[in-house]
Length: 137
Image (cartoon, rainbow, N blue to C red):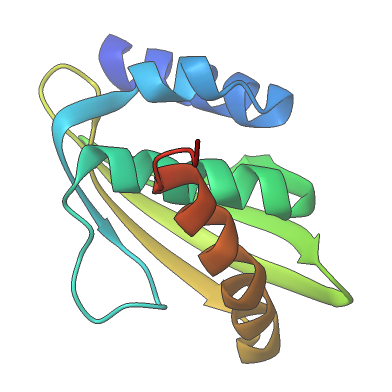
């Protein structure tokens, strides 16, 4: 594992544990792609990507990225995670591709079971809408 990838792993694990959105924002490349099981097309807008990430970290209770269960191959990484949304336990993996600067270029998310994904979608849509909408005056 090269130094940039090692730094990414360390910062990502500590930032997700602390729900430190500022540190996570620093890990995003300017051009990003997010593939989520909820949408057919990738999210390529950086602000929308950040909103989804913020929603996930805010809405999933007891979120835990396993320090023991992550895999690295060059600039590609896989992290396993577990958490809870509503009454549903969820289990999934995040598949990252980092750019040459060690920042997230691509993230593909897999979540199971479908009931947990559906529950996450139900609460996440309104959260993201509120986050991305201009404040009403």
